[in-house]
Length: 156
Image (tube, rainbow, N blue to C red; front, top):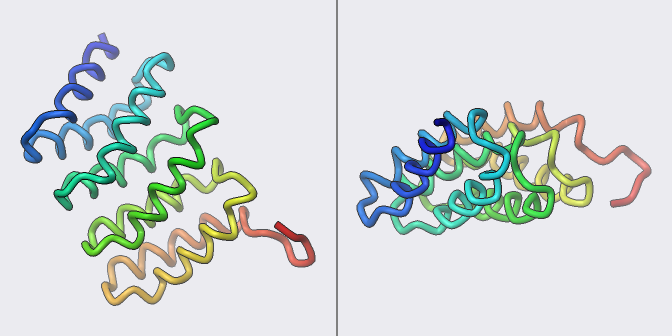
């Protein structure tokens, strides 16, 4: 039954109307823990696709939902996920940047070691974002990312 709901949400996430895509993607993020493992690739792909949506609300929903992927993201897609969130962290819309930086913090345990420095540098830059909501979220994300930071004297 959960699989049928997830399939329906994926179908809605491909709708031509952004007013349908955005809430469908948010619902996917909220229900991600119920998704059958066999659907993890399909869910990850739709969320990655929607990070390029022309509507800021859909990009925001996709960025937020990506932060919930930690339990299902296929190993070979982790770099795509990080690339997507790093790109969204530079979005023109502050709410998209905010969702992206929150998701980077939420994914701290699955960020590949060779990407941790890049992620941390990006989040540190966002601590100075002109939008206070984004800078506050970046400061919270840094606390979550601290264990992933390269140790002094080690090279990455």
